[in-house]
Length: 217
Image 1 (cartoon, rainbow, N blue to C red):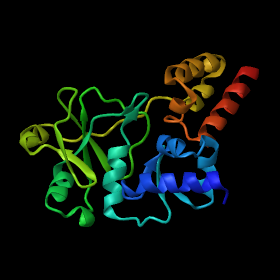
Image 2 (cartoon, rainbow, N blue to C red):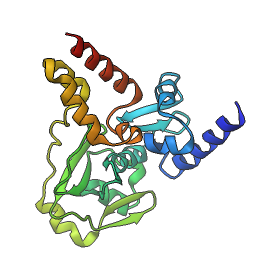
Image 3 (cartoon, helix red, strand yellow):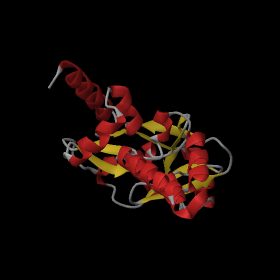
Image 4 (cartoon, one colour):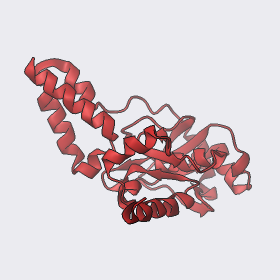
C-alpha cells in the first residue's frame, strides 16, 4: 500500500472509530478516497453498504450501535448534516445504557420540512417534529431527543418516509424530455461532490448512459 493510500486508510479508520465503524461517502472523500473508489471498495469487500452514501468498514463489527449511528448519518443535504436525533424506544435504550442490545425499530426525529433523497437504512422510521430545530443531547456516540421533549415526541408518531425524489436514471425513462429533466436535477444538486449524495459512483454512470441513450432516440 502506497504512502498516500496508507494515510487515507488511517484517516478513514479514525472517522469510522468515532461512528461505530460507519462513515458517509463525503467523509470517505475527505479522507482521500475519490468517488470512483467507493464502488471498488464495496465490491472488493472492504466496505459494507448500509444505505446510499453510508458504509461500514468490513473490519468493524456489525453491532446494534451500527444501526443507530447509520440512522443519524442518513439525513443530509447539499449543506451537510440535517438536525436529527434518535427518538422513542431507541432514545430510551441509549439513555438507559442499552444501545448495544437494542434491536427494535430505530425512530429518527427530523425537522417538519425534512425531505429525504434516498431510502433510509433498514429498520429506520422517520418522525417529523414541529419546527426546524431538534432539541437533543449527545450521549456517547449518539444524539437523542432531549428528555424535556418527550411529550412532543409522543404526539408525533413516526411515519413512512414515502418515495424519494426522482433520480436522473428514472427521468431517462420519460422519453424526449429526459435530458432536460435530468439536467435540471443534477444542476440543482450542485457540485460533483454534492451530486454523490444522490448517487453512488455506479448509479451516476448508469444514469448518464440512460440519458445519452434517451437523447439518441
